[in-house]
Image (cartoon, rainbow, N blue to C red; front, side, top):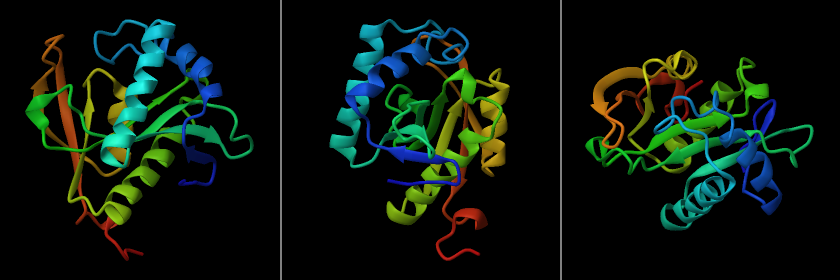
Length: 181
């Protein structure tokens, strides 16, 4: 279970379903995700079930994000996933994040995603990690850039047709090389 200065990236608990559904129902939070429509409680629960299944299948996935001062509070997810929704980037592993609006603008996505990349390159020994971002999502673009990711190829979402950018970082980048200062 990775921790950072302000966050705990932990396994999901049944009590996380309600706050996770609340953030997925927030139109601003999901504005650049999929078709941009808020999720119903049933859809949010199905997403959490899919996150659990991803962990079981791959041995890594999206962690629940909680503040260190109270790890019972779920403020979203950060972690690694196979982006099967976008076949044109496969095989790949994506670092991703989705946080409740109250957690925006505090540097938490960058902090947690840095821990996820450390896990990807240290523990999992991955060669590269991508982040798929809608170019209009300026907040996520800034996070990717702060992580040292470089913009790569553009792709079309197979369902919505929206243009997406795949940012990329490799294990050879200094910030995430094993043994780097």
